[in-house]
Length: 348
Image 1 (tube, rainbow, N blue to C red):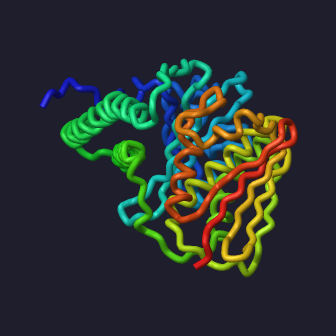
Image 2 (cartoon, rainbow, N blue to C red; image 1 turned 90 degrees about the horizontal axis):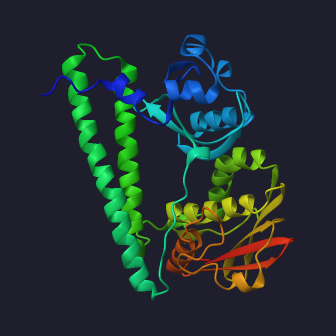
């Protein structure tokens, strides 16, 4: 094997993203030079010290606390003001030890000020052809690099074991985390490529209130940062519905995030559940910018979006999932007054 390939620290330093590792005691155990530049700190000033030596924004502490509590990864767009104002994408991923216990958090920072928007030039053709074209593009432009990343990670593992007699736990955990993230991205990619074959094979009787509460716990930091007050009006004796919990979480999370993003100046977001006749209704009401009448009829169409950085897939996939559950989803909206999205599911 070529022993001239850089070992892990050099590989991390060559990345364009900021990398920070935080242990289970909330102390910083690793920071690369990109993260130093983005946050205006030096490694010698923050290494093995609590996170408040490095971060100053409350939203970051909330995200880290949620990852530690829920042991689930979070991904947010944030704005920092020190050392200067920057827009960042912050990804926080829990790290586990060999026994599966939480052992720390991997933080990845991407400077979105430097991002160049990708523009898709899609001809107005029938939906089937459009899906096929986009799917082919994604399969080629995303899956191939993912496969390459996986191969290089295997080579990296070999280099670590061959060139480092006793690699530190942090290095091994970082490699495992990177492997896990590549696998997660690959799984998400497979879901997209199988967009036309969505099926709910893991349906079980579930309480929609519990699904809503678990999602609110995840989005609370984002809501607070956007100055959005979330209110819950959940019917206590709500009957259970037959749902695929993972898929329904995806739908509700997408609707809630859309509502938060629709209120750039803040506002109230009210989530209501109630049984009406033989159906369970979930309503998500915001005080956002609203949707023009001419756009409202198209919002569930494939690739239809008015968002600057939107894909036009979120509501389309949500509608399809709800239909697979024998339910329905629709919206009412007034410009500058807000929107109400209603999701209905049959009671078993």
